[in-house]
Image (tube, rainbow, N blue to C red):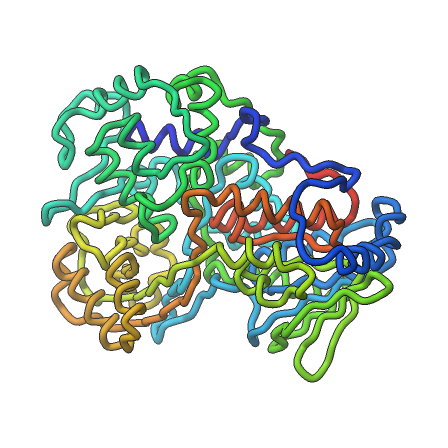
Length: 539
């Protein structure tokens, strides 16, 4: 694994408990004036008068009251799960606009029984967040369903870049750092040496490309980090914020002047839960894991648990608007019906919540609507009798090589148990980037035929899979990945300051804020539930 990827993972999975001043939001508990003046004073007085009852109540007052969770994706499910497990749980109502739960996590079966993931396909077990997700799996009784990718497996050791019309293995191990490793013109040791001597940045935020170019050089920035941003965020490294997308790297530089020095000096381990499954994952050095029937087994198990705990789940009920009543309670409009809530956890995209808020919360709505998202087309392909030219997790494609293909995942290498019978080679082509954005901006019709053709051409050109696939699934996920662009932290700060100063009974969760991975979303739901219940989540 190359040096810069090792650094990235080390700091992402085991972040320091505290960053430099200003890198985390510290909200005043007294709800004092934190900025954001808006509207007429009379409107503000009415708004605050409606919240007076909420202010007088002690922490934990919601134990016997109603919490509405907006959004039945993994964040909303996790929030509902932790609320339902409280010693004296509140009444929980989960509201989902669609007819199914799980959000972007969706698994389907092919004609031969093969499992195809239409969204995330593997979860990393490393770090405190990864351990907590495994603990959740155990609590739901899914241990026997786990499919691990152990540390000595090719899918754990081998990752590739597609550059110059060829696949290039990213170097792994210490020796690999000192050897020439195409597509890089020099051994990556020199990028590491440059990083150790680079001065600390002075700006409060910086694009990922600028940060990587300044610390690791132009090749690492334009090939490795460009590809990584496309693979994780389906975004542009020249627009994404390093402070928000990779906060541990940003904090490492601020604290230790060097990312590598920060890793060598130790980031400090966060407290982690333990279980038999977590211990097994550590002992076998799992790089990722899935579930035998696909990752959608996880939200399905959460659904069953919530139903057994008396959580009210409303499907096919999109929220149409939120308003705060005179008694300080929320009214949640659902088309031809409505709900009342003492507190709302919003696990819908920030832009969606921004459209639901009442006029009195205009500053909050503006901050939320500024958090954009991009679309990704996921094309699942299965081939009979085909073989891959290499064995590994998959490959990423920098924007300079192909503006539309983000990367290809070799699903059959990591999880051959899901290949079906008779087995067939499964790969997933991810399409997005400037190519897809340009088509969307033009109002072009993104037909399944167009996306399938693009994916099959990529598989043929980049992997030599020239025969037609035996099975193909095409899904376009509109606005599925939030973009933490330069200055994203300021949008979050504005939103949090407004919530604190106005003492709104509203808690934010989900991928729009501080992490787009499944582990991040589950953790955001857990922390949202802890804040509502008046407890302090483990850091």
